[in-house]
Picture 1: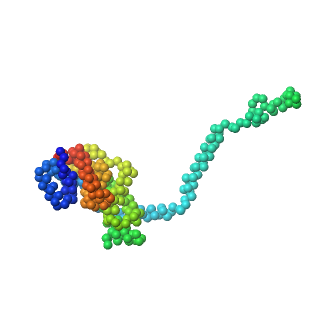
Picture 2: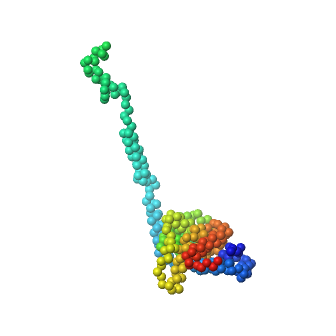
Picture 3: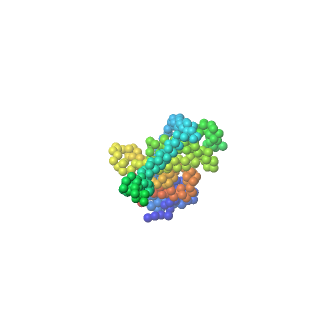
Length: 143
Length: 181
């Protein structure tokens, strides 16, 4: 069962209500067991949430922080305005990669064969040079 | 003039002592909030140092329109959220506490209950949890929470309401709280 005052109970428990509303809730709590039970739960939760209040040594914490700031500032100072080494590391792999890809592609593509060159310089049957060198064929050339 | 503002002006003009005074004044507050939000006591100091590093770098953005403490609460809550998201930290499961071998004294039961509530709190969605922690740990008013988190008072009210509802459900499920409803 829900009660229209349920949401206001949190404000009541947190002391966030105006005096009029506070009186209204207190009157309502006497006659509503649902809200009375819910308020009990809210108060238990408030009590059980651990406060975790720890106290650290302020000087130790500050010295650590100061060292961290100094370390960070040293790193910023030692970092040159234009770090060629760093850029080189980033850029050198690009041409190297392009070169490797180019070599692979050039090897994969078949040689550009010119049929006339093939015929003249020969790498197969029926080369023109063969025709010239064979005595029997000279008459043919000469007409 | 507000003491914090004097420290900030000092720091902005290059005097590190201004920053030192702010750190020493607020370090425990930051550590406690971080610890409650993460449920992790070990990393709390490290994370608090990260918070102050952010303050160190961003203090120029603080215009003095709100209290410095409100601004610091916001930086702390946001930095902790970033840390949890970045580290995807495994938050201890409530089940891990089921096997606790602990002497059944009233004092021990109380310690265990608080530990369970702390762990249950880390299961509450972060936006509800942060409002709850600022309310319960720091004792801020709804108005102060609204200023710190830059949300309306109505939103603070519903986040605290929802946060407590979820926390209650988890604790009832685990038998830490009795269902009175």
